Each structure stands twice: as C-alpha cells, then as structure tokens.
Image 1 (cartoon, rainbow, N blue to C red):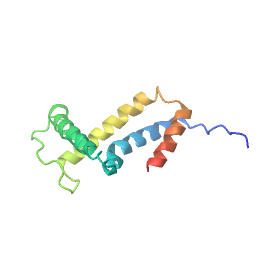
Image 2: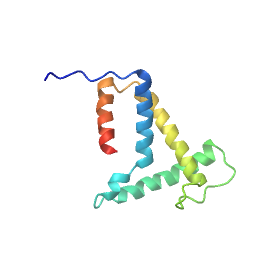
Image 3: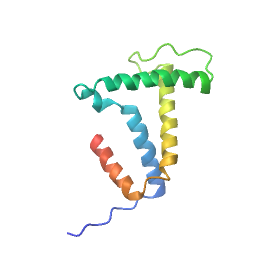
Image 4: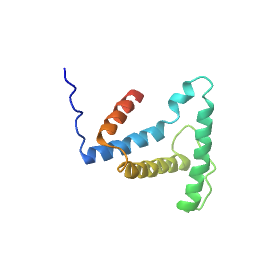
Amino acid sequence: MANAAPPMWSLSLRIAFRFAFTYFLLYCAPFPLTWIPYADQTGQWVDGFWHAVVPWVAAHVLHLPHRITIFENGSGDTTYNWLQVVCFLAIAATATFFGRFSIANAQATTVSTAGRAYI
C-alpha cells in the first residue's frame, strides 16, 4: 500500500493543538519522571522552580498586596495554585505564538502522535 500524505491541519487547529499540548505538558510535568527510579529528584526541581516563579509573578507582575506563603496543601484551591495556572496559560500562549513560526504541519502531526502516546 502506498504511503498516503498526512492530513493537512488548518491554521486554527494547529494553534489550538499547540496551546493545549503545551498547557497539558506544563500541568502534568514532571509526572512520568517521578516514577522512574533515581529520577524522583526531578519533581523536587520542578516544584522548586514554581515555588520561585509563582511568588515572583504575584509580587512583580500582578502586584498582589500579600505574599504567597501557602504553596500546596492538597486542595488545589490556593492563591499559589491559581497563579501557577495563570503562569501555565501565559507560557502556553507564548509557546503557541512562537511555535507558529517554527513547527511545520508534518512536525505537528509527529508531535500529535507523541502527545497521544504520553496520554
């Protein structure tokens, strides 16, 4: 059977996919790495990164009047968690914008396949 050309994605579909894939990756990271033996330190590095970035965004970008002192308590409904989601959205939007100029349609199909394997 002859190799068929991959289906062409519309511009809006590519943009939506890039945004959703980047957001999902940020939201779930570093999930699979924490299950690999001797790689569990990666989760602590990622948490340390967000514990530095989110309070900085709160103080310097959003100018919140109070410092963020409660990070994660299991509920997912803290100022820290909501600001982390805002950071995820901002990074995903930025990556989508710059990805618009760098990823061709054929590469988007490859990334889509890799994303389905990750899920």
